[in-house]
Length: 267
Image 1: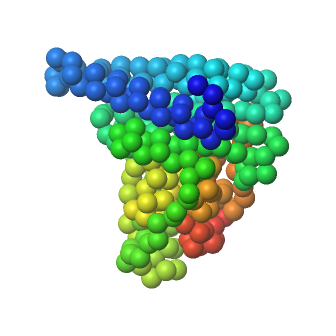
Image 2: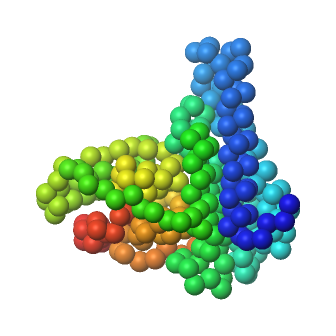
């Protein structure tokens, strides 16, 4: 198969990794001991580890096949310092939301993004796909982007289930006072799943002040910005990728009308 564009590559490899994850999950559910409560925790851990490993190996093999001259930064891979000299770097999370995947929940995703040193796109992310396997939802940077309009009586804030912002009470209070609306907090898994939720109009923003890594954000950032969302750090600055340290301290993904209030609150 000849894939002419980087967008094609991002979509194809993300979908194939997602299909693999769905098949793994279906197989685990079919095992005789899948309903045995005493085995549940061990089974979940094993399924999560296998999902991480298998999806990483598949993505790595596919990117080597389709873009052999490019380098890859993967959550499950080895951090190669040579990537800093690369002109093109694929930043991938083979399974974002491992614990949600292992529990049979839908809010996990595959992230595939291309960082290109010569790109004029925001944050130099020139191609990206987020695939949510359970719902077969694909979001890519070459979509005919349509941000679903919202007309609600509330503001919906997405946060990590395990690490919500410690400033959350302050954020909720500030948004409520600024816009005169009730603010609803919704815990959710994968960053990609959160971005899909915002694009579809089911939420308004995602706030992370506890930190995560480049592979958590690169593909969701590319897709979010393509669809008209704003992605920045808590001070309103652009996110920079392909750093020596992959850690990103904080980020905001939001519908544009809320960004100024969030920065005022967080900066």
